[in-house]
Amino acid sequence: MNNKIYCSSGTMVGRINNYNYNLFTENIKEIEADGFELMMVAAYYPVLSELISAIEKTGANIPVVHAEKDIGEAFAETDRDILSKAFDAFETNCRVGKHLASEKIVLHLWSGLVSDSFFKNNLAALPYLYDIAAKYSLELLIENVPCTTADPFSNLSAIDEKYPHVNFIFDTRFGAFHEQTDKFLSSEWLTNGKIRHMHFSDYVGPAHDFRSLRPIPHLGCGLVGFDSIMPVISEKYHGSITLESPELHAEGPDTEKLNNDLRYIKKWVRK
Image 1 (cartoon, helix red, strand yellow):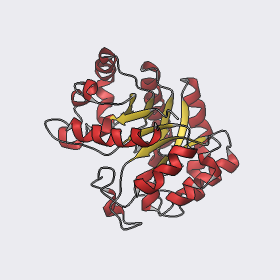
Image 2: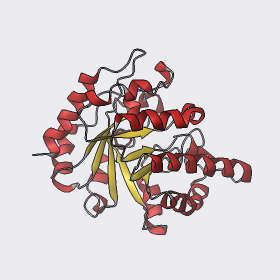
Image 3: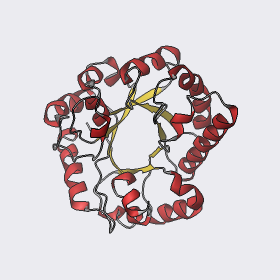
């Protein structure tokens, strides 16, 4: 099996370094990955042209764009102005993906304080989001993000029932948060291609504790139990994986720590 292994730009760029995308582009050549997942943030909107140009100059492969995380919170709303702005923001994210020749766009369909409290509203927005992504030749993937009302597996099951053409991404940290890792990895989604991408990072627990979602530990430093789940993933999963465990510092990332995590993943999926 030769799953593609990517590294998120969010492992290098964040609030602590003022979302300085140069810390990503300057370190691309040091990262032992097959490509990168661009984590979109609101701070990039005023400098999109510069961001795209800087990435293109590196020649880096950007097969996945992660849509701005806050977009999903708006889809719980019914106010037309709020929804219109959210759809416009998502389309801007898709446009970036098109410029970078990306193949997939990851979305938090629900998020923030409202979470999945109005999941029916979020679900109603999905076909429009799918069509927007398709317009830019991107495959839309919905992530198993934390819930406050139901749970990710139930919500994704509802999506699968209503919109069977929409595929998913499994995040190990969020799986551990909801104690649903085994449920996801034993589901037919792992083998039938429904789960098309994965995010790897660890989680310190306890379950359902939103305060424990950060800081995000490196692989093997939390409760996910990678040594236990990797044999299942390496045997049954046929898709890409992005490392999301961050190395955020004002002066730039410790690329060796990121590479250690990437080597660990490769050890399992490239036997």
